[in-house]
Image (cartoon, rainbow, N blue to C red; front, top):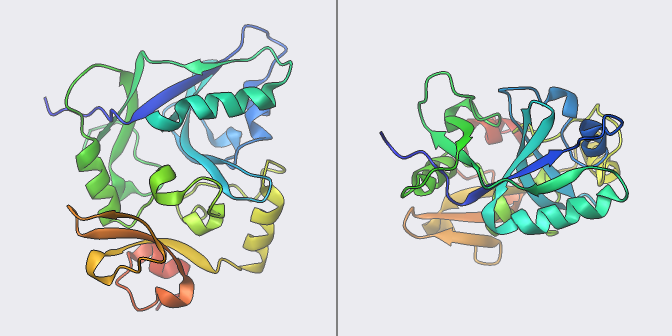
Length: 247
């Protein structure tokens, strides 16, 4: 069988044995996604922002019985656990990595959940961690070919406003859920339709080093944070071209 494990991802489990605690209410006041939309078999892309609305961590939220699982970058998992514990205060909520669970991906995988950002991204699911070479390289190449960016290396940490990460277009934010950390600036940008910069994936020969976050020479691609007026002439994926009103 083709290896499906994304070895550069980790899973954090939030749980509680106290019936008076509400995991969803705890996360509802923190993350960009409406927790009511996080149901079994339907992951949601989301983020934890700074008070100014800049991305700190992006991740996927999964419902797992009475627990909530967070599918995040392996290298950022411990930092995310630490940050969530700061917000926990005296609540009786357990927040810890669950290394028995792994994140899996395949372009075609039957009835497995579809990536919530774009159906063309393929299928994503959680299962036993397992071992193996992993499919993260294939996943990254395919994701970038569709112009979708993610993670600290591409989006930065406390560097990029969440809507500049194309969060609205890729289903990573709710504008009806109420307050959360960074909500005020995010909602204002959406109301005024003032997203002046965007994360884009461009051919490496068209790279602008001043705007570049990371280059992928093996793919011939560059991930950049550019002003909207500087990307209109690029060959953008349809979902992004539509978002910035390119005919």
